[in-house]
Amino acid sequence: MRRMIACLSLVLLLSACGGDHEASPGGSQGASSDRFEARAREVAERWQGSADDHAWRRGFVALEVLNPHGWNHVGRIPAWVNASSHNGAWRLAAQLPADPPGDADVRWPDGEVSRVPLISAASAYAGFSKPADLVEEECPARRCRPLRVTGVKLGKVPLETSRGTIQVPAWKFTVEGVEQKKIHVAVDPSAVTARPERIQGGVEEVMAFDLVAGKPEELLLRYGFGACDTVHGPRAYETDQLVVVDMDEEDSSSGKACPAILHTATTTVTLARPLGDRLVLDSGTGLPVLRGLDRH
Image (cartoon, rainbow, N blue to C red):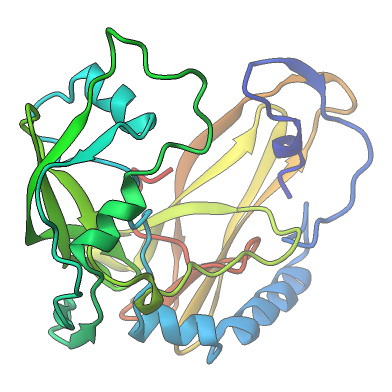
């Protein structure tokens, strides 16, 4: 598939991405319809009815980091706050509840309600008050000062999951001299299932999708391709519960140097019937394609 991805780096370099190549395990370059259908059938059979499938549809799979060491972004976070937090310059100036508050309800967009265990405020504080794994330098005197926690309340924050965006319980810590609240999701990590892993060696073919207004049988796909790639597709393989989509990028550089740049574009694919509640899977990774073209 996209062999040029292996040539990408953090800086823009010129590299020769040509040469002979074969289809990767995550798809096929210039693949025939028969080979695509075989691959798509394999992806569909691997996913359908699996533990990943069940968790994605009925479980609690977070699509973002549960606690990214962030704040409630109301206004600008002062630089000294970020530096102090990175260095673990936390101080307790209040008594934090040491016992978990008990299970809480989480309501899903379809109306279903799940009960999830919560962690205590003290446990949350212990989790975020440690210094970062990589601290380049100790707190500079002019950029760091103690972050004194003076109180905490249990509230809710939005969280994106495989079943849609939900409101989850979260501890909101008050920090002296800081307008924003320090947020820590209160859901016990044991209640959250990790995102599924891509098929070994698989390369992402379709980055995101969306529906097309007024055309229920069409999907709008966003995909990536290299500067010297010839794009084929899109293609779709359908079952009653899944749609497997694919874009085919064939290296046409003929051994010439190509800019190591990943371009993105959109295209549409027509299904045999409207998508409905079927999942969309990427043929390269074997993972669900998320709705929303502004992703990545």
